[in-house]
Image 1 (cartoon, rainbow, N blue to C red):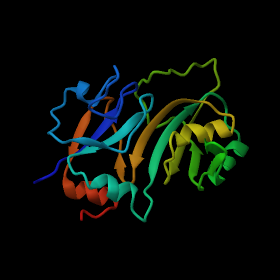
Image 2: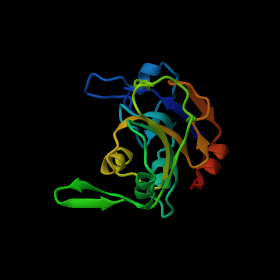
Image 3: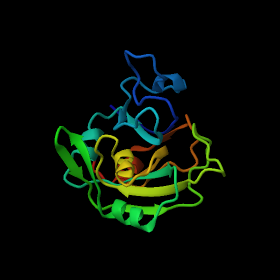
Image 4: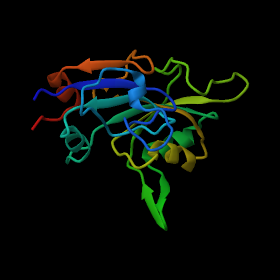
Length: 198
């Protein structure tokens, strides 16, 4: 069986699945002719946006997220304040947040920078106001705890107003509009993710 591979710019307020017992916007609402058996690789929560990978190949999630070599994911994040050099340093070096009852996680070092203007040019649910201080950050990391980017920002007293995933390894969101889907060839897909199809 020949598998298929897709890049999607997941819109705001849509869950990363085709079925749900809740009244939410689903991937099927995009009305794209995905083949039977298509599923999302990893997830973006409903109020996050950007690059979501989909495929009919069930091995990809294991190869990408459960292998020995961590894979980079890039985000552009809008926060509700000016960001200080001290906050950038803390985020880059690693911050601590709670992940359970008396259980804390310290993040691995990652790449953080101010990006102005950001790659993301599509209108989102939150529109910046000139009267309110805000900053776009680029964050590239290799780990993915639940809501990690948002929790990292909270740990340094910043509030996330918009979160857009722009890359996974060498696969880029590029100029895909929200809700737009692009099919990619299998060899390009695996080469760009730096994983081997076996």
